Image (spheres, one colour):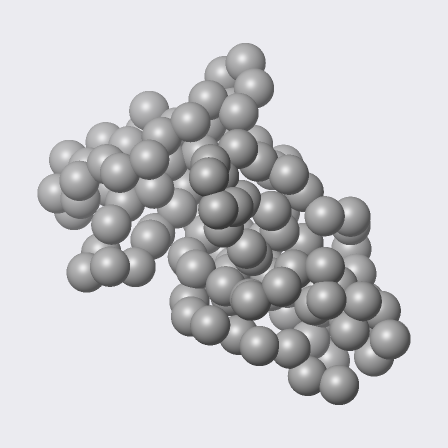
Amino acid sequence: MSIQVKELAFVFHAVKDVPAARKFYEGFLGLKTGQQTEVGPGLWWIEYDLAGQALCISNAFPGSPSSSVALEVADLDAARAAAQTAGLALPGEIMEFPPCRMFQIKDPDGNELMLHQRKANP
């Protein structure tokens, strides 16, 4: 059983020091901030738009891989069921955020990918 991947949702980089990361991404690289959400006290999710693709940084996921790719899927619940049926390694449950939902899977080499679905009315 396969799932329907629609597009690249975002590329993610875990950061520890948000002010230093912002100085690099916004100052040195000159990227413009898109969405920025404080997801908990002192924990940030910040998106930069790069020609219609999102580069995201966050300090909200300690222990996360330093980089990851998120793929937008048509139906997140169906994708999760398909991953379970296929016996894929699922490191966690579906995570809920105001604009989206997502969960992680691992490929045969242990590389983590996020499967992601935007909410209709975030």
